[in-house]
Each structure stands twice: as structure tokens, then as C-alpha cells.
Length: 447
Image (cartoon, rainbow, N blue to C red; front, side, top):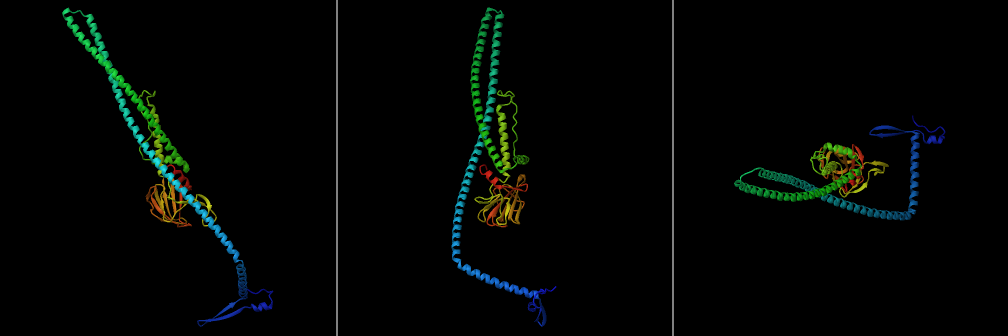
């Protein structure tokens, strides 16, 4: 329906904005354009608005030109303040980089010391095995000497019995005087032989007693040495258990659940040490006192090996060497200035092309572009763990590929929803994100 001027308009206004027809001839054809009163009124209003705005901006320009000098002074003051804040940020950044370098040096020193302790532990275990073998040989020799001493004592007793029998036969038999001298001579010779044999047996018994005393002292020394070795191994086992326990505790993971799964997957040799009853004189139930300690020690080493087996398959590592942490895990201001949002990982900044490393062994489940993440690599690890590496410049792995801790899997970039070159790093447990900084900090004094 065509618009019409208000009924209250005066005849002059109605005459000014009366409906008009405009004829246009193009390409041999004539067209009629109808200009209604509402269209004419709107055009007049638009022209008046343009003229009014032109006058307003001209006035504002003249006023701004008059105050330009004071504006330049304020601009210079703000620029100086900004440069001062920028210099302070650079000093703070230098201090943080120095702290990171010192932390890396401490980590390398701890790694070196741990390797030395591990080598000492292996050497001590080898010495303990050698001591056990030498102790077994000495025990066998001791038993042989005891048996020889018992045999010599039995022979001496038999000779004494034979001598007593000869004496009884001599006293109970009457022989002729001609044969008595021969018999006495024979008896004297036999007695001399018996006495000599008895003396030799007594000397051998003295030597056996001396050898038994020497072996007893040697056994005591071996047991003391074995006690020291056991103490050293127990200290090393306690240190390893405490360090590994602190690492898992710092990462805030369910250690019992992980150890249960690790026992099902662990293919190494071992098992609990179950001592066999022997009959050693130092134990009432026939079990050597050290067997219980050795059993506990072997179980501790089995637990340490199982914890290391699990730790090798969890993301206890740093994805970037020498990077700078720019944003932590949790709620933060959105970098695109869209309000508060949940940040489910860490942002680590470094130059474009910086190497990105896998933090644990696993299988690549995704390598390509994803909305918001840009180029992203996802790796599935054991026990329901997954790591995500986003905003990459390129990926160096493919889906289905197996990787190990420390393998270079990608290069840093700024793809996807990013404001600069950095790595967005996530750790997920059963698809739920957790704070990766706990895993990075938990390993700096252990692995």
C-alpha cells in the first residue's frame, strides 16, 4: 500500500510532496518511475542529516586542532610509560630464563648422580652374589672338615678298644715263656703303632680344631660383610621407592590402579623371594635370619622395577626443551579477548620450528588439522593416558606410528586459534584433562 502524507499536513506540504511520475527512455523503450510522497520526504531527511553531520565534524575538527598541542604531550607521556613497562617486562623475562637454566642444570646433576647410584647398586648386587657363592664353598668345606674330624675320632676310639682287647687277651692267656717274649715283642710293637696312630690322630684333631676356628672366623667375617651389603642394598631400595613414590604422588595419579594394570602388562623376570627351610643353626625354625631381609629386599626391587615400568609408559617428560611457560592450566582470560574460558593444558612459547618431543612411549591416534587446534598430534599411552600437541607448524608422525619418549614428533608453530608461536600441551586420563605441570615438576628430581 502506498504511503501518503499525513492528513493534518497543510496544502502547501501536500503540493510539495505530491506523487510524481518520471519517464525514462532507454534502448528504444520508455519506462515510468513512480516517486511516492514518503520516498520524497525520506530523501529530504537524509540530505538534511548529511548536511548536519558535515557541520558537526567540521566544528569538531576545528576544536581538535586548537587542542592538538596538549594531546601530543599526553601521547608522549603515555609512550614513555609504555617503554618503561616494556623494559621492566624484559628484565623479568631474563630472570625467568635464568631460573629455567638453573633448574635444567640441577636436573642434569640429579640425573648424573642417580646414574652413579644405580651403577653402584648393580656392583653391590654383584658383590653380594659373589659373597654368597664363596660362603657356600666355605660351608661345604667346613662340613667336610667336621666329617673328617669325626672319622678320625672314631678311628682313635677303635684303636683304643683294640689296645684294651689286646691287654685283656695278654692278661687272660697263659703261654709258654719261649713264646711269651715273642708275644711281648709283638705286643710292644703293636702298642707302639697304636700309640703313634693315636698321637697322629690327636695332632690331626688339633689341626682340625685350628682349621674349624679359622673357618668359623671367616664365616663370621662373611656374615658381617653380607650384613653390610644387605644394609646398603636396603638403603638404595628405600631411596628408590621414596623417589618413585614422590614422583607419582607429585603427579597426583592413582598409583594403586596403575600398579595393578602394570602387573598384568609387566613381562620381566622376577617374582617374590620365598626362602627354603634349611636347618641353619642360627634360626629356630630352620630358616636363615637374612633370608627374610633378602626376601623383603627382592620384593622392594620388584616394586621399584614395576614402578619404573609404569613410569616409562606415562608422560613424565618435557615436550619442549628451553621453552617459556606463557599460560597455565585452568580458568583464564581468553587470548582473543572473549571473556573467561577454561584452558585445559599448558602454553609453552619458543621460536617457530622448535622441536616438539613425545613425553612417553605410545601410538599416534591423530595427526592433522583440527578446528581451533590447527595442526595437532595426539598420542595414546598406557593406562588410559593421552597427550595432545597443538598449534604446530607441521607434524613428523602419522596415525598408527609407535613412538618412544624423546622422539621428535612435530615442529612448533602458530596454526589454529593462536596469537603467536607456541605449543599447547595437554595430558588426558580417560579423556579427562589434567594439569600437565604436575607431571613435568614431579620428574625433575627423579628421572
